[in-house]
Length: 139
Image (tube, rainbow, N blue to C red; front, side, top):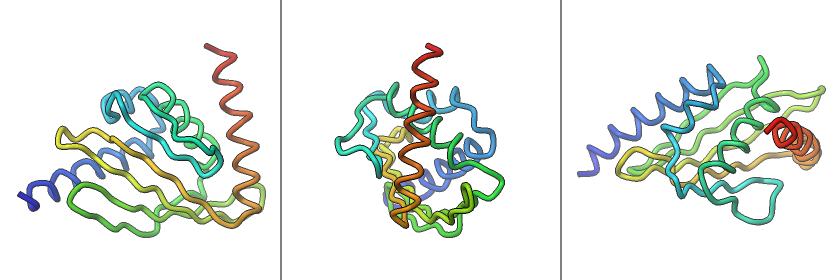
């Protein structure tokens, strides 16, 4: 059974990597479970549900997804993956990880992001706040 889950994780990761390339928020609708939980490095409480998780992931893609963004490591389990990444914003080097967990249907049920160093966390917090405010104003 674990071998099947591992194959699903690989397929799910391929789908995630394709999304990262396109930054198309509409793809997230098919990838996220309705009850997905997003854990942010800058928000103290878990963000629950597809709509808020889509907003956070779309904003993060806009803030972090520059030409400098790249995944540098991948560690998988039977139900999830930890993806190391690095990027640079406004001259600040950022390292982080995305921790993704999928259910048996191949939907993301938890997405956790961790960042370093503190200077980067503070900058991303400010930029994410601006991006989320823009998105809210447009809806």
